[in-house]
Amino acid sequence: MLSLCQPALQGAQATRCLERRPLQQGAPFLAPRFGGAAISSRSSVKPRAAREQQKSAQDEGQVDAEWAQEVLKEIVQSPELGQRGEAWFAAQLGALLLVAFPPGPLRPVLDAAGWLGIVAGLGMAVAGQQVLGKRLTPLPKPRDDSSLVTTGIYAYCRHPMYGGLVLASAGLGLALSDDLRLALAAVVFLVLDRKASYEERLLEERFGAEYAEYRKGTKKLLPYIY
Image (cartoon, rainbow, N blue to C red):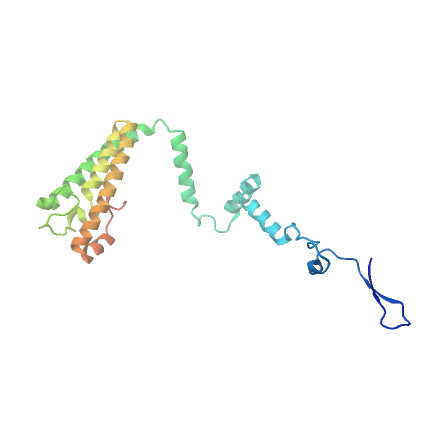
């Protein structure tokens, strides 16, 4: 206990002592009076709300058996069963299983699809060329005397010749069971898709709102698909 004594102001009194309570931690305002640094320091313990928030964030990021049970229960017992895209999830699962375990009887089906793709792709390319006529150019920039074509095959897709080449390339890879050709068909798609996008910017500069309106109502490379 700290006692502070001062001389009495009256003769009859010897001294008068003023008692102070012991210095408490957490009272930094006393430090300047008695010298030295403040006795207390801030607590390093995190508040309860911060700890609970951190624990909640950790729990949300954990994928374990409990999570699997909860998700399965939500899917099977939900009143919205069949309305949240379950069919797409089933298709995704089926496609992955086909890739992992391709069935042998599927080979003739893919061969037939490949030959059909070749014929359809070449047919699209020829149909596009026939409609364009002398307006045809291998370059993305349209010819100076060309006009916008929206009839024939162009009523269904904006670049039928590009789409036909992609379809025929993929069909050739399937028909010949050639994985390398299939991979290169993907490269053909990427190149022609980018070329078509560049060409469309030039066409919109040339034909303005007319081309923008035409673009809204048609697919890019393949009718009804893309």
